[in-house]
Length: 194
Image 1 (spheres, one colour):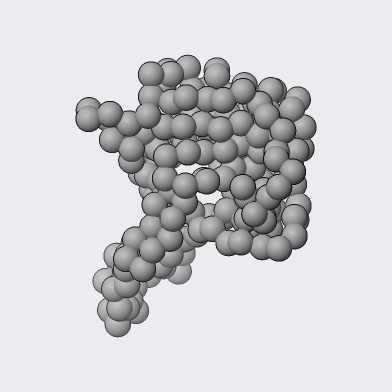
Image 2: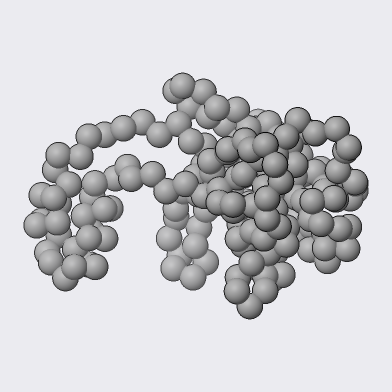
């Protein structure tokens, strides 16, 4: 990854940061869907430079970086087009070269914690063609656990359902891969950390 641009969210008293994340990330996702290849891979990865992990909760912060191997790829993405409706709430830098001095490399990947026994039971019942009550018994012993991974609440445009996109951060020593999902995330590809 040689080029990047940074998007800073500008919340205000009427528009909170979580609401902004939902709107901004929905638009970024739509833009990445448009540039994905036939296998659903994208050459643009994302990072959250203000991501903070804590014992009780974690936060994404207020910035998002888009990375690509070259300036042309980010230019083709055309972030201004995708965020034009939100121009009062975001600030985008110009495309810049990634600094020589890095603190390392990071993988940002989608995490799907098992948290809701009712949702799991509905899914199990549908997949195994059994009734909901029977499936719910299978999950009756499930212990509630607190999830500290930060997330962005999104709305599926295909199914019109809201869901949480949990984002897990892992530091690694060496750069790996250059392909990402239509969310800019990957379980194996890294982005520079600085």
